[in-house]
Length: 350
Image (cartoon, rainbow, N blue to C red; front, side, top):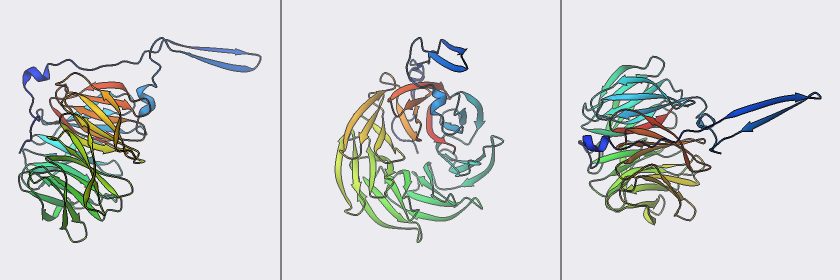
């Protein structure tokens, strides 16, 4: 099952890429009177290098929906170091806590592929429901939750055995999953039933459904577990849902076609990929207002999914076929990497 805007035309894929190189012109090193002085001369951009934003030297993984591949990107150089064949129409992706495996939702194969990140080879395939889209690991890494858009269910996968241990009926067309910081609850955005299903992870049952606007797609939970941020694609806004109150406590206009949302590690900001204008809206989670907008390219760039670390914000641009790297301090694009055709999901290794 595929949702609006996911399959791009050939004309869309030919749109210009965004690339902002960092220029450094020289380093002067002079020693005198036993004192060493260092001058760093910058000819142009004052931005920190992309290397300084690397996530502890890990790798970034991007699923390419129309190529049936995963691009593996060096987090220090922002260059593609491997391209791995996956299942049909790979979409969501999650990385194990130890970084040794990646779990890929193969939408067209009704399965999850298990990637060994040391060898960059698929070492297992686990059948799940129809049209799996979003995947999310529990905080302890022992359980993977898979949103099956075509089965209206969530598959619960034991990562130690790579077997499905439960299938949880949820709303219509579930797209994405988030898990509370304590691992006790999973939240599922159901784009077809305008709701977020709340799953008790101990009983594998839906305990309530929360209102979430017109067309909820991406969902993220704050580090304190108090709120869920839901990207409402057709309403051009983000809904902030109070977990305890079970109500929408705020709505934040962000532009046409918000598809995914991810929170900063400290919970101070929410980063929203907005398809229509081709940007990322930065939401202040205290005021529930857009505090900044980062342009990733012209309409047709289609920022799609977001992953956030303490040092970088990574965004897949589905129409442009690129991965953008944003400095969260300056909110500038510091690197743009060409990946495969119709990049979808993104995840960062520890």
